[in-house]
Length: 115
Image 1 (cartoon, rainbow, N blue to C red):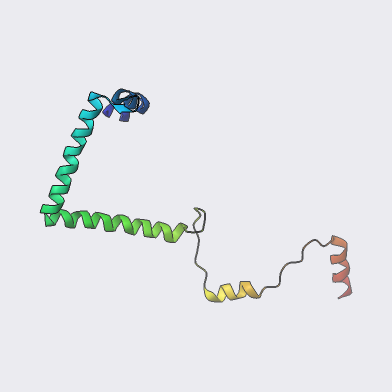
Image 2: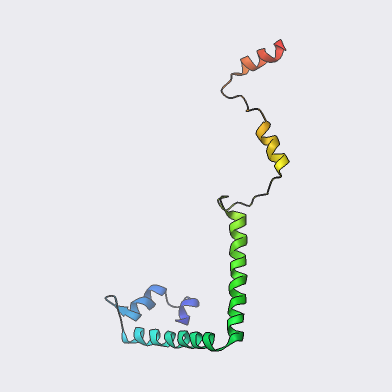
């Protein structure tokens, strides 16, 4: 399976080798059991070792902090960075008169000349 990383074998071929007709082959069963050994060791160490739990908690908090920062930066912005505006600037934006729309150039020129 390390060959997937080096691109010697495609992931499709590995999955095809590990299962037939939706059922795992003997090799697929062996790989699944091998993975369960490490999962079991992780769970037992997590339950038994306070230092390991503390290390896992620190990693989780770091990752949650990264996610919180990403949510703050990109939420509702469709992946674009934004800059927070002050309340004073927002007030100025709200008080601006709307721009005229659908006017012809002649009527604008006539309006300017009469004033």
